Length: 482
Image (tube, rainbow, N blue to C red; front, top):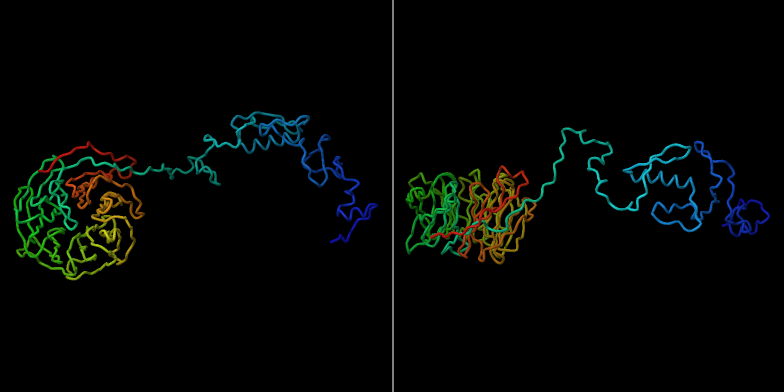
């Protein structure tokens, strides 16, 4: 498109073809400096007579470059200019925050604070980094906010990967449906080995043989009362025995089940027992009757039982892949969960949140699921990749331990609710079928068909859970239960 308002000129034909102003016709194009038509008004600024001024076409000139800024040598016959070099040094001083300023003379003879040239202007320097709060647009000082403390980031807690103690446990059965290990509030471990029950005192390491059922019976479950020295022992003949561990004396024998008793759980003076005959019996040890209630609902062997910490709800798991929740007075389950696709033995109530229940499925399921029994909702599911044999919740922190069987035989410490793995512990060569936690909540003991009991320090103490101290393993020892 042609310019409709062309300026008359003697070379109008040439100018119109190039679309150039008349002052920049082809015949007048050159690199000679031109004189500005009017002086620049800028706070008394006077153009230097030596300064080269070009027309509106920008053609770079080496004479205006400052090679010293990047520690490069200028080309031959190039001379710096006072105005350009002063501007560059001022810009460098403003951007690079000099640490050792020096004075140079600037415009008008005034003194300016500058810094020496640095060949490493693009290199990160740790000494120039500032705290994050110093970047605030409000310019807070360290002491400007007396009520705000800047706590350091805590490193992740380290869990020892090796057991601090290993006990031989001859004849410890490799049976998924049994519960043969329990730890009392008095720091005594009960273990069912074959047809005998042994007690191991964690304070003195003393081993005591509590009972021998004889050749016609086998120990299928053990369970300590919440307080005191009473120990319940379930047998393969369907009987339930109550023993006073302090005197090594049998107090009572209860009947009611037709088949083996593989699951036990205490609720104050109420003792619940689950059997292969598919029923759960509620027993009051203060009453004369062998049982005061019978719960029916499972279609196969009951292998998991746990009362909640407030003693209001009983969770039961069975070989029918079902998880049920009962209350103190119900004869039918008040909640039914059917999401698991294998036997549910692993059950654990959270001591931190009312109504939070965890359950784990067997080989065909491999999942840990979390439930809110208050709202009757399924919260989350984690596929562990292995048969879930046991679950226990930490008393001191919001973490869960799971033990596993086929095919990895591992022990995993999980952070809840993120379910991130804090540690994976290995050492057992058979399925880790048995799990109990110490009364102080810091140590767990695991048992397997490899006939060993292994003790692990996995949780912090209540006093040190907010500190950064590492939980270390104590001296490694090995003993034998005989």
